[in-house]
Image (cartoon, rainbow, N blue to C red; front, side, top):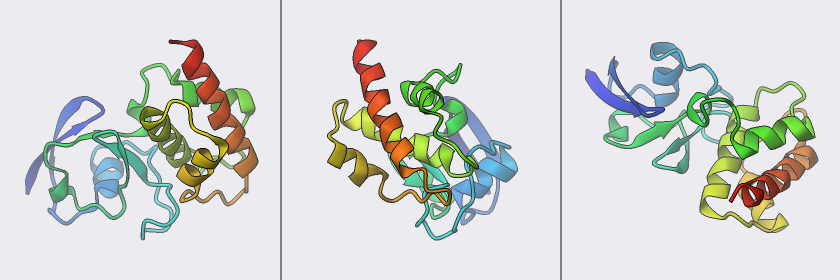
Length: 155
């Protein structure tokens, strides 16, 4: 089935089965491999992307449901990897193995788009559904707090 998708602000035409999860279309068809496969059941957050600005688990989403929604992957978050969350991640040196980090960054950036001044509790709640096998949770929370600072100083 031929489907038009808007991914990272570009219209992409893909010919895939309508039930193929968006994750596999992104990785295998469009070769956008920043979005990771983790658990396959929407529990770990490694596959997180934005769909019309809302955090979405791409491993669970059949590509046929996407429709006209705008999909943003980690590759499309910022042209020069200078989104405040990406800058904060580097400054705080969050990643250990790095596998979950794209999903973590996408979740944090969606949070900041919805709430530009989240409390510590807001941050914990938003990031709760993302699993980090290396347990860098404290650094992740610090990086989100740093991203808040960076976002507020660029206004």
